[in-house]
Image 1: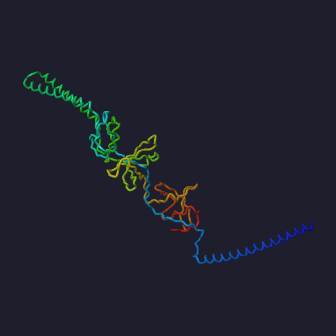
Image 2 (image 1 turned 30 degrees about the vertical axis):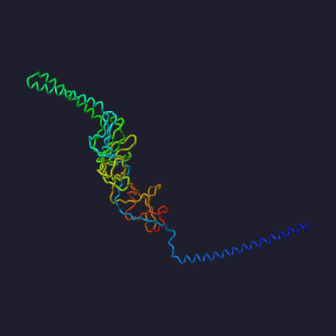
Image 3 (image 1 turned 135 degrees about the vertical axis):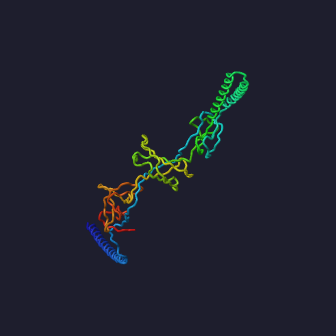
Length: 367
């Protein structure tokens, strides 16, 4: 028993000595760190002293725009398509099989020019047969005229011969007119734009023909939503920007529909285009309709306008501090808004840094 007590007593003494050594080590480590921190503080103070005095860290850096009156124009932007005033599908007047095509894609043709032939063999045979009959009746009529000039025969015989000859002539003309219905003719002056048929295909009136487009008379068409009805007028200035982005054209609206399409809920506007080698049917273009213009307007970027429960506001700089101004805006176009009230010429509008501002906060102007 005594032996056990001696062992326990020795263990406790060793633990006490260990704790004392541990506390001494921590105290030495803490003293060392404090000494190092003091040295760092001295270095930091020396560096701060060598730098220029810093500006007020409470000021918010902002960029401003000095407002000046300018002309504000609002446009309606919509996609338009270039089409031909004369864009037709030339087809035959009678159904038949195509036997010959006389034109190629891109070929310029004139009004009435034959573009293709259809099979008219049966009519040709009838015309040939009629030719023989017509020649006979012509000879009989001429012979009867000579006899009548010699007081031979009767007037009735002469009139009968003439009637027979005239009837045969009219019948032959009708057959030739019928044969002319077995061709495809161009109804306009233009360019062959599409030949969707080939020799051996069946052609019918209004179908399976050859498309001819006139580039001399082009127009641009666009459809506007019904909300714009009454806001655009014939004669409004228009700017067309073509697909490649390099060409543009300034013109005006030539037609504004007065009725809304019941299905698309839109209405049609048209612009007549002058002859231009760069314009082609089915081209697309961006259409900008200028339907509002005001001189000496206060104009600001839409991005600086902040929406609140009380309405719209923007920040200006006045006396080195931010000032929140309640504003009323009008038309918006191309990322800019017309200001109807609240801002004046000469105001310094905050255009960058306004998201971090509070009313009355100090600001620092940056370039």
